[in-house]
Amino acid sequence: MNRRDLLKGAGLAAVGAATVPAVLAESDLPQSGGIGAGKGFWPNEARLVISISMQMEAGAQPGSGAESPLPAINPKYPDIAASKWYDYGFKEGLPRLLEMFDRRQVKVTSHMVGAAVDRHPNLAKEIVERGHEASGHGETWTPEYPMTAEQERAAYQQSIDSIHRATGMRPRGFNAFWLRSTPHTLSILRSLGFTYYIDDVSRDEPFLVNVDNKPFAVVPYTLHMNDIVNFESRYFSTQMYADDLKREFDALYEEGTHRRRMMSVSAHDRIAGRPARAKVLEEFIAYAQSKPGVVFMRKDEIARFAYSEPSIVRENI
Image 1: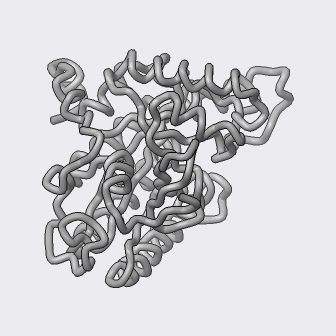
Image 2: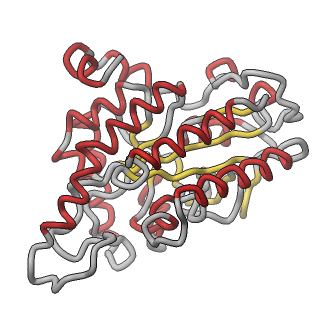
């Protein structure tokens, strides 16, 4: 199905299907598609889980001073060129990535900035209707770390409202602006009904931490398998990034025979959505899918598995 037909004919039936129960039964989780040799670290003996993040951010950036490959200008002037660079994310990038994920039959987690959702609600709705997860990524590009607890809570509630209004899905996961949250963040997230966050890159597997004397799931994000860090800082060519993805996978796949391993990949709308970069990502996915026991999972599915699995790592619990 192409995205134009989906937008014309699809209702919100798929939204309900994308909302999964608080604890997944093993039969509800993705199948491994082959002999996993994972020794029970993942459901159905899967050997390695890959989770892809797809950021929906275009349209939420400030009018001047936003990060871009262009030379910086005085912030008192509108940065029209940078704004057009961001526009590529919703005009071309996300549609291209969605078609590619459909071809590969992969479901991802989309970290959505509330202001971007408000500007492009039909696109946010389409992401969910295609079976992907809508996750919180703040309401604007305002960093969370200088906020008071009251400001932080209000911003998160606003982003929840933006995502739910457009998609019918209430976000359960959270990603702070550049991973930098506050000492209050986890307690606020729990009180607002979030069940996991990704802003801890200290492990290659999901784990639980103690928040208000209760477990809270961490589904680790990535900086080194992150297109905005590698491509847009111009350290990597497209081919170098492709090679790094493969090497990361190969190492974790080997480790997956004797411990629980998860690979995280990050794709931003205006970066990984470029033609050559989307092709690199698709080729990597095909390579990973050719190996037995590899499963692609949304982060909400991984978090629910973490809550239900007695052997999951628990820190300070």
